Image (tube, rainbow, N blue to C red; front, side, top):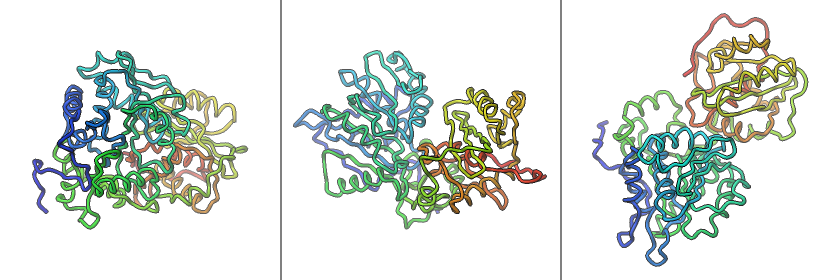
Length: 467
């Protein structure tokens, strides 16, 4: 298994070709990207050269929609940012741009925590007037009047707005068309409007992305030169997943920002299905989810309201960017009470809830939330600090309860996203919810802990197994 050299070109399996008779804005976007300290990689340059083509007959963008699907860690964020900033600064009039991700919370985190620092740390920082961080009003506002707004992932999110451009990031997570439904009507009066859809492949349940992939492949095969520009880097399903030659053939960032060692480690630690989806950009089956879609749908209802014998569960994201609180009752009803950015709000809110309801709080003592145990106990909160073995038991018990329909869960979009992305991490003969997913699984961990009812004394053995 001989690895190709990094100088070899990684060709997409499907790609709209460049039209040599058309002008494009690739040089402008490339210059923006370089000033951001993120020079375009060859695959990004290929996308931009086509995505920014101008139709000479109309003087408007030739492609109203650009769909890009690549493996994880390929540089989607920097591609999107360079494209957005070029629109914001170089189009001659103020631009209204929307950025969306799996949920409004994910969009906020990516725009403010990933994209904003790149922009503010570059030579383009003086072009920024302000960064709005207030929840529900998050935006990057430029001195020329342009702005990039976070758009919530709901059908009504875009009502009352007119957009010039939009990004639908991580489209694999969408099991319906809400984001597109929110965005497209806002662009109806903008002749220069464009939407960029970027994602790694999903599963058979990824409704929006799968439709975009089918339409994009058809557009390429039919030789379309307007409307949809489509790009897909993925591995042939028949190729060996442990052969570096396979990796070099489908990972356009390999040899640039990622190495074979990184991919090899992912192969060793991930399930085959998740490795194929995340790193080879192959669609997988939703049945490969830990909790299948149909099983989860059977236990979710909008009228769930825990009442009597309450117990709270809490979890904090591995990077401490957010935290979740859930509650359950003795009858098996459970819901997410809070899922908010940051962790500063967490101790006060937990103390308030626990005091109001006279309920204990369950914490994984070896998780990021474990650091709040002493503080909570100091506030008089009864804390059940679980060992890793107990947490593993809780994970298995919650899974069994879902499969047996002996638990009911209040419907929650962010919890749905966590369940869809959740993976197991093996610990001896048991398992924990893995924190290595693209999606924050803290809402799922919180409901798992809230549902756990300690029986007897705690096990003596403690396994420390968190990332």
